[in-house]
Image (cartoon, rainbow, N blue to C red; front, side, top):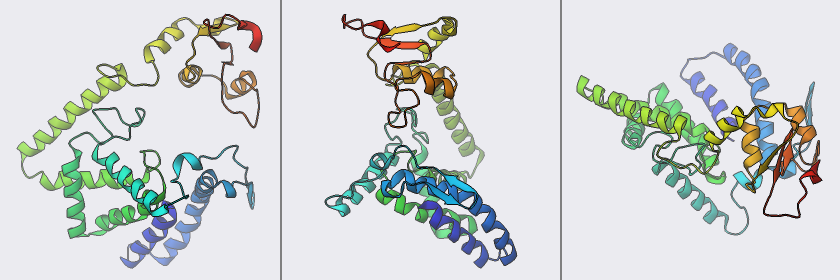
Length: 296
């Protein structure tokens, strides 16, 4: 949705401001189309189940996706749609106001996606751009307007609303630039961002002073030290449904070997891994009737 609005408006703005000629447009548009059409086809098919079919365009073939994420990324169109849209907008505003979408892989709690001090700079940048309206300001306003359909119907997190990040970061930079009037202010801003960056780095790489309910980095380091590739079979006594996913993400494995050795190998219907892949297998010692060999 964003690209369908932003790209044509972008070219129109540059043409009306005499920054691009018709000849240049005739060159840019076909090149961009080759790049953007596959992206838009993927976005449409992954979010609208009824349109998830194999598509043939000249020499390109886009196969049908095995699953759809529509239920995860779109609002419900059942019941009161206007109420659902209003709730979605409020949730998005809450996400930016609190500087976090609640997903630890997108924003560390206490640090956020833009650091806690960004809000004043963001507001200043928006006001400056709306009043000044040079070409860059118009592009940013256009980027925000192009994001409105997404904000209406796409559930908010920093992945789903990714295009608005460019606009937000640009407004923040304009806000910072606007208030940097002397060297003392410059120094204060630089020191503040430096402190926040080092604090973020410490948490991100060491997981200190914070609990992130996802992957245990120390556990992965231990598993790597065991050199598990040297053993025919490795058993893990755990009932954590995400455990093998964590290992697959952090310890490299060939996608072909993964597909051939996981639960329901090469299945086009069941895509998840439940208890085994490669030489790894989960067991539950609390269930004494379970056979370690049953999934061999």
